[in-house]
Amino acid sequence: MIWEKKSQEEIKDIVFKALQNNVNYDKENILGLPASYLDNKVFYQDSTFLKEAPFISTMVQNPNHIGCHTLGKSESFFSGTQQIEKELIEICAVDILKGEPQQQDGYVASGGTEANIQAIWIYRNYYMSEFNAKADEIAIVCSDDSHYSMDKAANLLLLNVFKAAVDNDTREISVESINQAIAQAKAAGKKYFIVVCNMMTTMFGSVDKVEDYVAAFSNSGCEYKIHVDGAYGGFFYPFSEEQSTLTFANPNITSFTLDAHKMAQAPYGTGIFLIRKGFINYANTQQASYVEGEDYTLIGSRSGANAIAVWMILMKNGPYAWHEKVFILLKRAEWVCEQLSQLNIEYYRHPKSNIITIKSKYISEELAHNFGLVPDNHHEPHWHKIVVMEHVTIEKLSLLMEQLKQKA
Ligand SMILES: *Cc1c(COP(=O)(O)O)cnc(C)c1O
Image (tube, rainbow, N blue to C red; front, side, top):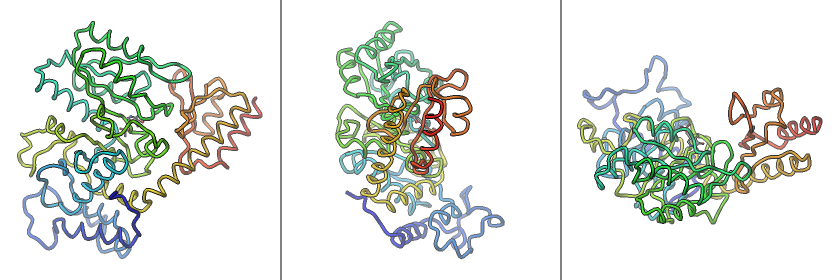
């Protein structure tokens, strides 16, 4: 366990020491980088409050975390803060997702979209270089409730997507619905599969049974790799479901996406990509010759302050407070479900999730607008969701319940 709660003083100490190990544009002669501190006419470095503010200080010093820091060499100019990102990746892979120490690579991507595309890009190249596969023999398989980033990835990487149907009420895929997707793909000449398994979907919070994918694909006789999309659920489900099989302890899974900018309340630009060692090299761009250590990521230059923010959030809370936070949100979600059941309002909720998705026939346009309820489809809504975040208190939820009661 390297994830241990730290005091504000300890956190400050570690971040400021890391910044000291980065390049100092004022004191050293650094003539060759297209980089500097943020424009000091706008962002003053000597402001006294910065001494108490490690994250803002990092933003102002603006380290570049270009590349991947869990393998080989990286840009030595920013090695201080890159070391903290490396520790953050290890916490996510080992302490949260039960990987073996030092056996995963990863980086802080711009978001879940990039992390999912990165995974699919890696597996596409893996099939092309290890199996001599042609792009049109490789397909993505996910579910009808998967995020649209899989469609983006398919479009960019010239792959087709085949989606397993979900049950309208349980939101579950099944071995049969996966088999149907595989049959369609095979009929279209596909032989190599990139499977994306949901660890909490965006609209429903539903969780795919990875065992269903494994069962269907082991019978198919085809090559497959499983990526888990935990963009929404990555900082929630591993805490709400202790028995989760969506971890690195499951040998069928090769990679994960986790977004810190959703449930972890980190700044935007903090999608976390994690993959078992031995795979990220399929995304290596050797032509990135001016970058020390080359580039194994999709994005290129990226802000080191983002990694520092996520690390600080995890360290300030520690694992026990994180469990407590998740527990409280689950309790509130249960409260909502009890209220809805009493009113005979139909909804979906996965028992380990903080999303409650209500059938739209119970939700007027006015109610959705007044309470910021988000529809599955803005043109023709079937469902509206409540996401129980930290600010979504029982006090606020009960105002919605009062309105629903009056309509019922
Ligand atoms: C939000 C989300 C994404 C996309 O993440 P961004 O950070 O918005 O790019 C992907 N998958 C799921 C399940 C999500 O909820």
